[in-house]
Structure formats: structure tokens, C-alpha cells
Image (cartoon, rainbow, N blue to C red):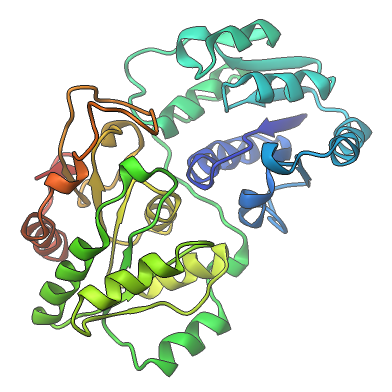
Length: 342
């Protein structure tokens, strides 16, 4: 039995689909994955994936690259294509793969509802899948697989250990440190870098140094955090996506907004404090019962619009003291029935 997973982007979305990969493999399925370049490092060389096919991102789309992706898809026919993305684009490529069955969420559970017209089978969801991980796992019920509740995140072996990360940590003399990740895809999900700097000062008072991680284009953001920290934080050395996972495994805690790095930290079981505003942590936040979420809930919540007058400024309403209290709670391993909001 051969399956094609269609989950193109983003990094967090791909991470949230990894438990479905583990469930497919445990039930004897051979898996290929269609993905865009930014998230490919999470999948390339993965022992559970037969083939990774890269689809060009919209901003760098070239017909020749798209044709090559199509040839690769059709060179190894699949019994089923699973559209986890819920877009016209993902449904279109699932259909183009010529899989015998093209399965995805029904319209109300898709980001682009009418794209369900391209599917051969539509899966309806119930209210027992609030988290996007369980939503993804529920799609597998169409294959007779019931894995809702699973939290297995298989990553390539390179994510577990990295000599470059070990060298970077040793060079800076880091022993007990906290990672601050101020970047993210949407401006409306970002907490001000000066607030992270204040948190770094509070962490220093608690005996921790802070390392500020950054992705492409976020270098200045990391510098602003360091500048606001009065020497309590320093920008991290450059890391690849898998090296970032290895770095997180060395940290005492990761503090971040609703971004791919936060979801990666959750996937490698690192203690997390999440800072949330317009998006819904019950849907795509930390899932450990020990992790803590600090949030301001706007009237438009949950809102996935990158620009929205209703939730403008909501992240700025969260104070460093609130985040430091959440850090104290998480490091103190205070348990609860679910990821707690403070």
C-alpha cells in the first residue's frame, strides 16, 4: 500500500503532520511526501519516507520545476493521496498525482472550502479533534487507521545530534540556557523584541543565560533582543532547521510565539512557554500538559488574518512579568489538565 502525503508548508504544518506519518508507517503504508522547499529539511533522508518530491513555492514558481515534480509523482503511482493542507493548490496536486483515491477534509474543515470539489473522498470532523494534530490524524480514519491522540514526531536522525550545535554551545560556554525565538511568519503573531530582552534580564536573575534564535531575515530582530537585554542574551550562531531541533534538545526551555520553531520545540519534547494572541493555542499550541501559554484573546479570535484591525496591538498587551511567571511555572513543573493559559 502506497500513500502520498500532501502537506506543502509551513514548517509548523509539516511538524503537525509527522504523527500521521508515524501512524501510516506503523500500519504498513509506504509513504511519499509532496512539500515546498522551506520544509524539505524536515523530511529529506527520513527513514520513514520513500521519496520526497519538492514543489516550487509560489514566489519562485517555474513551469520546468513543476513539470519535474509532476514526473516524479507519476513515476511511482500511489494508491491514495492525502490532502492535509486543504487548499486549491494541495488538492490540485493530489489530483494530478493520479492516485486511485484522493482524500481530504470536507469543505467546512478546509482553508479553501470549495477545493473539496477536487477530492474523490471527503472526511468530516467531529468536535473531539480540537488540535490540528488530531485533525490530521482523523483524516487517516478513511484508511481504517484510528490514531487520534498520538504524539509521535519522527524526525531525521540529524535532528537528534549535531556537532555544529555542540561546538557552538561549547564555544559560548553555555551550560544552563533558555532559547528565546522572537521571529515568526506573521507580524500580528510577534511579541516585541524589547519584551524578550526584558525576559532575558529576568532569566539572568534566575541563573539562566538566553540564546536568541533567528531564521533567514530575522538577524536584526535577534540583535534588538540582545541590545534590550543589557547583556543577558546573545544572538544564536547560525543553524539549519535540523540543527535548531538539536539546539532545543540542549535548552532548559524555549520561549516563542505561534511559529514553526515553537512547534519544533514541542515535537522534540522541550519545555515550552508559548506567547499567543490572535491564533488559538487549543488548536495549534503546545500539547504537553506541563507547557504554559500566555495569551491575550482578541474579539476576532481565532483569527488567521495576517492583518486585522481587531487584533492589532493585542500581543503588545502581554507583559514581561506575565511571561516570567509562566516561565517560573513551567520550570517548576507545575502540572495541570492541559496547557495552561496565564
